Image 1 (cartoon, rainbow, N blue to C red):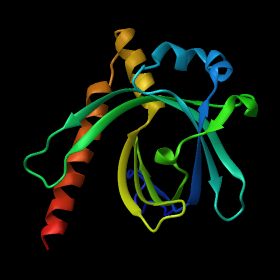
Image 2 (cartoon, rainbow, N blue to C red):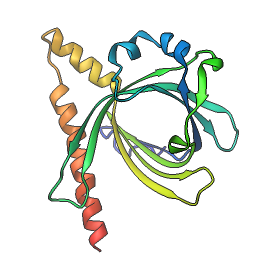
Image 3 (spheres, rainbow, N blue to C red):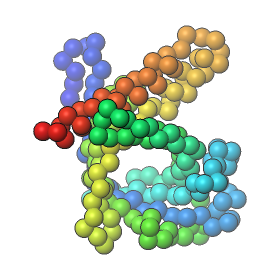
Length: 190
């Protein structure tokens, strides 16, 4: 991480992990033992699945989470070569019984990730090259995430009728998306 030259500037954190993900479905007993937060927000169109992230070099498990997508908003962006999707998901650490897991089908196969990750203030931008097991196929993903903790704090401020930066926080997320789409369109034209 590079230090800011001026104390009034926010530091941009950078990391470049090489990882791979394994995905698992839950059996019925596993579904019955889901955390209440996942059960409450579960969308019948998107069943929750467990993702195990493993460091490619050390082979150590870095994270094991259960994720359930709540909703998507598909955004058509006519001024750009790129559209985008805003997704709201809930994630929770998963520490359940391994016997509750079963491997997912070929359509959701394991994937290897070469990721460059930048974090600045409330936002994280991940550029990821994804390779799939037993194929030469590669995909490139660009993901912008907003800090869940900051969103919660600002929503709490709203609920308590205190000063809140919720709207500027969300506006910053959308501005980041629009700027990235515009820059990618310009660079693609060159």
